[in-house]
Amino acid sequence: MTISQNDVLFERAQKTTPGGVNSPVRAFRSVGGTPRFITRAEGPYFWDADGKRYIDYIGSWGPAIVGHAHPQVVKAVQEAATRGLSFGAPTQGEVEMAEEIARLVPSIEQVRLVSSGTEATMSALRLARGATGRDKIVKFEGCYHGHADSLLVKAGSGLLTFGNPTSAGVPEDFVKHTLVLDYNDVPGIEEAFAEYGDEIACVIVEPVAGNMNLIKASPEFLQALRELCTRHGALLIFDEVMCGFRVGLAGAQGLYGIKPDLTALGKVIGGGLPVAAFGGSAELMSNMSPVGAVYQAGTLSGNPIAVAAGMTTLKLIQEPGFYERLTATAKRLAEGLTDAAFQEGVTFCADYQGGMFGLYFSAEAPRNYAEMMAGDRARFNEFFHAMLDEGVYFAPAAFEAGFVSAAHDDAVIDETIEAARRVFARLK
Ligand code: PLP
Image 1 (tube, rainbow, N blue to C red):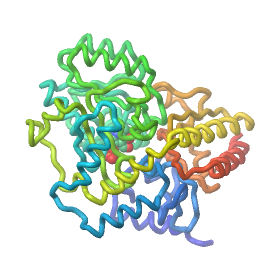
Image 2: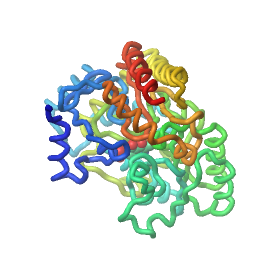
Image 3: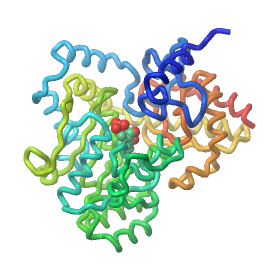
Image 4: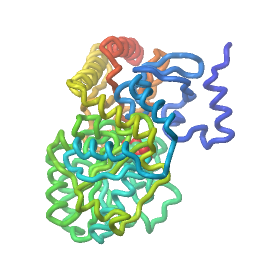
C-alpha cells in the first residue's frame, strides 16, 4: 500500500502547527479525514501532494474568481516583484486601486486598503463607533465577519464547524455591546431598534450570507435595516468581503439597490494576495487617522504586489459579459446537481447568486441559521468524501458557500454533475 503524502504532511504539520493548519476549516474537522495539501493550482483545478487533480469549488474561499494562476495576474505580480516587495510609503498603484473601487462600488467615495477581511470589518466597526459616539453593534446569527473580538459572537463557518459559536479568550465585556439577531427577521430588528435605537452605533450584515452556507437576504430585510439605521442615526455596514465583486460588479449593494454607509471588501479585490478594504462617503471616512480621530494602520497595507494582483483581477472582471457567464456557470452547476439528486431520489437542493452557490441536503434552501442547521450534515459529509474521491473538491463543511470561476467551463461543470450523479446513486 502506498502511503499518501497528504497523511505524511498532515502528521508532520500537527507537530508544529495547531491542528496542522493555519485556518481552522482547512483541517477537515467537520467532515473528517485527512486534509489535502495543495502543491499547485491552475484554472479550475488544483493538485494535492499525491499528484491527484481536483476540480476546485472553493477558489481560495472566494478570491480566485478569474481562475487560478491567471496568466495576466501572474505576470502583473512578477513585474511588480521586480520593482520591490514593500515600501512602507504610498504608491501610484494604491491611488489607482482606490479610484477603481470608488468607481465600481456605489456607496464608496473614499476607501482605505488593509490586508485581511478581518481588519476591514474590525476597522469599519471602530469607525462606526467613533463617528456615532455609540457602543452597541448589531450582527446576525451565522454571519461571519472575521475574528475581531466583538464580532466573534454566533458567527458562522469555521466556528460553526467546531460547534462553538463564540471563542475562548474573548472577554464578556467585549461582547456585551454586541446584539445578535436572526437573519432575515424584520420584526426582530424592529424590536431591537425600538429598545436600543439611540445606543446602536451600527448594524453589520453579510447582504448575501456565505458563512452559513449560501443564504440570500430578502430585499425587505435589507430595506428594513437601511430605514431603521437612517431613522435612528446608526450606520449600516455591508460586509461584502465575500459577496463583493462576487455576486455582481457592484456587489450586493448593486444587486439590491441599497446603499450602506460603510462597506468592507476583501477576497476578490486581492486576486489571491492579501488586500482588503473598507470605505464609505468622504465625510464618514474623514474620521479616519491621519485626518480624523479613529486610528488604524498597517505595515503591509496597500502592498505593491498585492495591489498589482488585485488591480489586474478588477480589470479582468470588467470584461463584457463576465458576470453573465459566471452566473450561467453557477446556475448550470446548481440546476445540474439538483436534477441529478432528484433523479436518484436524494433530498437535496442548490442555489446560487452570481459566482457563489450553496448545496443543501434539505428540500428547500434555508433562510436563516436555524434552518441551515436543520439540513442533513451526515449526508453532506458522505457526499463530500465521495466527491473528493471523484476528484471534485467542495468546501469541507456543510456550512460553507461554494465558488465558481471564469475558468469553470461547461465541460468542467458537466464532469462535476456526472460525478455527483454517481455519488447520489450510492447515497440512496
Ligand atoms: N467577512 C466575511 C463575509 C468573510 O467571509 C470573511 C472570511 O471568510 C471575513 C470577513 C474575514 O476575512 P479574512 O479571512 O480575510 O480575515
